[in-house]
Image (cartoon, rainbow, N blue to C red; front, side, top):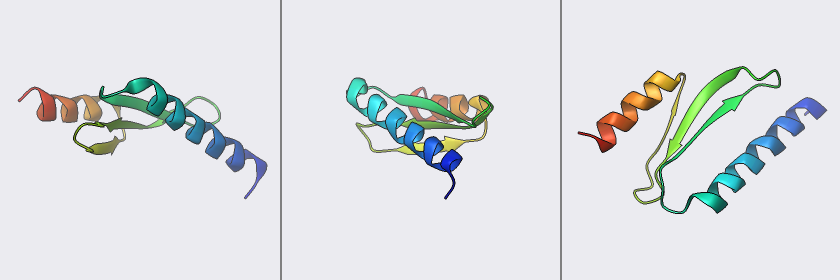
Length: 71
């Protein structure tokens, strides 16, 4: 594992930790990006239901949220 991958992993875990500490029971939404800032995935997690999902675009994520929470 090279230095670049280690830094990305640490950044990802830190982001998840901060979200977990500050979110309470709210729907959590975040994006993952590469070292250059290009977004490659969107994530959503509902701590109340335990449901989670990962998408390739913000639009796909919004559709999932609409279907799950605004039926």
